[in-house]
Amino acid sequence: MKSDYIKVFGGNVTESDRVEQLLKDNDISPIVKSESESARLAGFGTPLPHISEIYVHKDEEAQALRIISQLDWDE
Image (cartoon, rainbow, N blue to C red):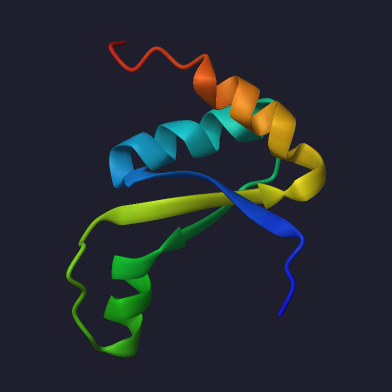
């Protein structure tokens, strides 16, 4: 199945929340996929708790990657 969305970030929930908000502040609509939340809702555990992935539409990929690359993770 072909998707119009592409993964631009993966990390812990804290980092993903920061990236998600930054993308939203720049008029990009990210989709956040949390394996641990999906597993919890299905009644299963996950070997990688608290890991999230962020996807954006392919048309927004370059802008999203530019924004993410400029993040200062030491703030």
